[in-house]
Amino acid sequence: MLKQHILVLTLSLLHRHASGEVFTALVDMEHLLDTESVLISTLENYIRAEEQKLDLLKRYADVYQKQHDRATQDVQSYLANPINAYTLVKRLTTDWSQVEALIATNVNADALANISYFRDTMEFPTDEDLNGAAVALTRLQDTYRLETSSLARGELNGVKYSAEMSAADCFELGRQIYNNGDYYHTMLWMEEAEARLGSEANETVDQSDILEYLAFSTYKQGDIPLALDLTNKLLELVPSHPRALGNKVYYEDELTRATSSPSAMKKGDDGSQDVETQGVKLSKETTEPDPFGKDLYEALCRGEVAAPPEERAKLVCRYVTRGEPHLSVAPFKVEEAHRDPDIFIFHDVMSDDEMLTIKSLAQPRFRRATVQNSVTGELEVAQYRISKSAWLKEYEHKHVADVTRRIVDMTGLTVDTAEELQVVNYGIGGHYEPHFDFARKDETNAFKNLGTGNRIATVLFYMSDVPQGGATVFPVIKAALWPKKGSAAFWYNLFPSGDGDKRTRHAACPVLAGSKWVSNKWIHERGQEFLRPCTLEKPPAEWTA
Image (cartoon, rainbow, N blue to C red; front, side, top):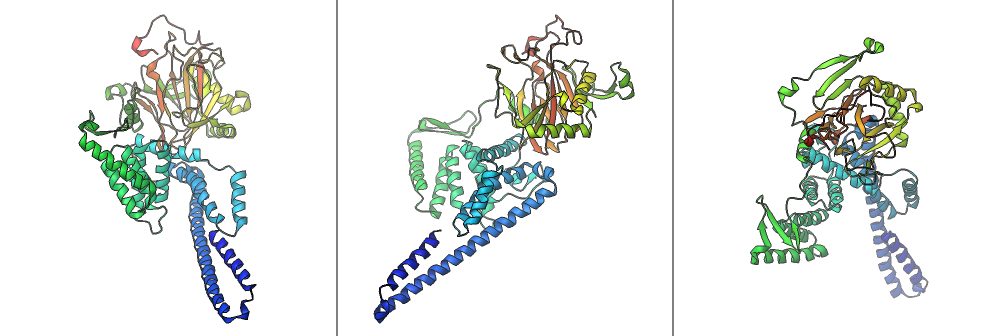
């Protein structure tokens, strides 16, 4: 646009000069040659700039079309890969904004208007979506101990699922998590962006931008000498960089103060170097202590922890009829997943048609999954539960009613007071951190509006296979259930005394590859009095919650 203004300005000046009767004197005509030279040079520069823009737009279009063609060959498989999902969101946020800006500098205003129209009228991902996708990738990276370089190559646990990420993809991921104050992962992804930039034929991001984020994140992680080195490297590229000039002085002052004052730098308990700066302690340890066994939870998600072999050897598989005549013809195939507390897996209890119907009914009404506030009893979204859900009633379709009736045969419990069937689909890195399904003693408002008592039991249907990740894990008893399409897990949340069994605390591990679909039925106490009679025997206090 600037060159366009220059061209117009030059033409205007030429027009004004020509109107001054320059033809009447040769000396004035000499100046016209200079004017013509400037005009030709300006026009040539404008044409070159437009050609460069068109070439760049063609490259954008070529890259996007290839990705789009690849995605449409198998949409579900493509989106089941978290890296593909992240880059799709990035393309429709950051990348398309750059395309708009590029077209905005062109004379082709119609193209800009068309893109702006589609952005306004169609469902485009938001900046929040992009940030969520970036955080999801770092969650997968931590939970499954994935190397940054492997993720950037499109590999998940050694399996290549997608095309490689560009330096710009890595940079944008790092920038997003930087905005969240996660300097550790920012360092990892900015380092990867810089490494990839060196091997790109056409640089997709400026090295100076990478170094700026990398240097400051390194400083926030407590390594001031390296932060200073990176800042000096940035100043070699951009000597007048204002923030780098200011940071250089600041880092040098900090190092001088640390050298002259022994109390300014001290060793942490683990031997790591901690730096106190302006009253803020910065160290390599960025995560707070986890009281819920985060390390054990993640090890279970990776399949690294299991119950002792002697306990697993006692588990059996059997057919179950519950004395029902119709089940004698087609008994349930039941696998014991754990004893005390008892966790069962029912195999082949949901047909493909039923799953397809339930998914189809749920998807149009999907909303961000919520959790119940333990104080107010109200439902609210939470960062530790990343998924979308919908609720289905029995009368909405025969398949929903059939599944609900089947739960009665499976469990021997009534579902008259149960909650509606909840259908859940997990997104990029979707998970649900360790939690209880039942309300604890201090959560007096939970389920109060239902008037059906506490959640006595849970039935969890798996409606898809998950190639990697997505297990349901029970950290206290070190048990893990791996999704198998058409199967269902069942366990009691409460002891017969009515006390909550804290051994049933469980979690949905992040989905590493694939799309995880589940549906669940929470069965309540009311109506179970004669089906599962209460006892006066109190369980051990350490097991109750």
